[in-house]
Length: 319
Ligand SMILES: Nc1ncnc2c1ncn2[C@@H]1O[C@H](COP(=O)(O)OP(=O)(O)OP(=O)(O)O)[C@@H](O)[C@H]1O
Ligand SMILES: [Mg+2]
Image 1 (cartoon, helix red, strand yellow):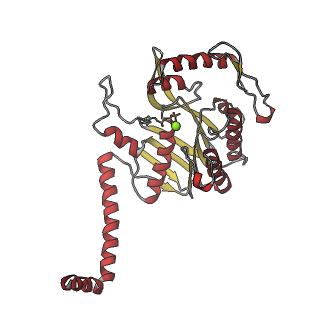
Image 2 (cartoon, rainbow, N blue to C red):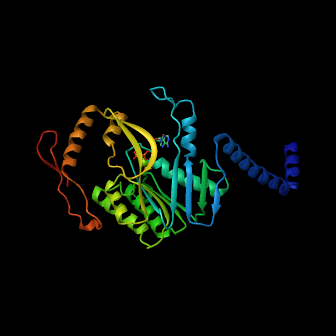
Image 3 (cartoon, helix red, strand yellow):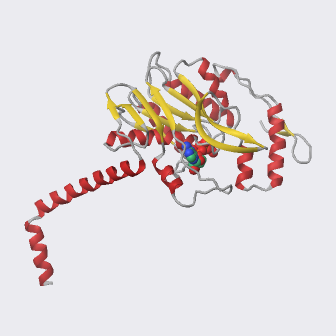
């Protein structure tokens, strides 16, 4: 106890110098960590300016990339899975909103998150996982991703989604970066589509500029908005079809996707074959009942009655 108290007294005598040293070492630790990361993982030095653009060439998701580098990423066919880099160009007054469609599992969420992470890393002073990166400073990064409930505080999953969306729409400025992942998925198809649609229109409401936004969605109807909103650009994550199988190539390309391949992904996940076959039948029937929408007003869209034959062939009203 005597020895310990002696030590405490010595430390207390020098407490100010010691805490300054600890602060300096902590900062050095972060900077050395970033430097090592930048060198070992091929990060680039971002260029930050006062403009309102964002240009990332060959950007990567820093975490997914690391996971894929680890030992267990050799596929069943023996190929190594490497992270596929993608470019991003956004600006407040030109390509303001990227509407990203594409199949399940294609890489949409990864892509929009990587843009937010690269922006964050660049603005805190770290190098970024990209070949090159030029960023007009952002004031805040807003994200609405994933599904979570807040039951203890009386919020359902959808209510949380809407709370977060409201926060974004009420607080984003032209200098903000917004990523929205599948807005509207937590409610009925038509309610969700209508909300997603009007959120996009709201973000584009100013005649000449608005916050840089990445919007991932399975509502392919929204891709028609490109004809009406001059600052919206359709992009999709490419896949290849091969013998009724889907091959993910992870490339973000200009243009809209026309299918989600949800049933193929459900089969990959191991849903019972009978469920998959039945889902295919229902899908064929639903797609036969044309569900096309007319722009520009969601309210003007007639409520469609979709009927599907259930397993015993009697008619079942879905809507
Ligand atoms: N650029 C990429 N290179 C390599 N692998 C990737 C890439 N992007 C995504 N992946 C892999 O694909 C998986 C699925 O990606 P992600 O969740 O982004 O798909 P998604 O399009 O959002 O699908 P969903 O519509 O089902 O939400 C990720 O877990 C990741 O392992
Ligand atoms: Mg996703």
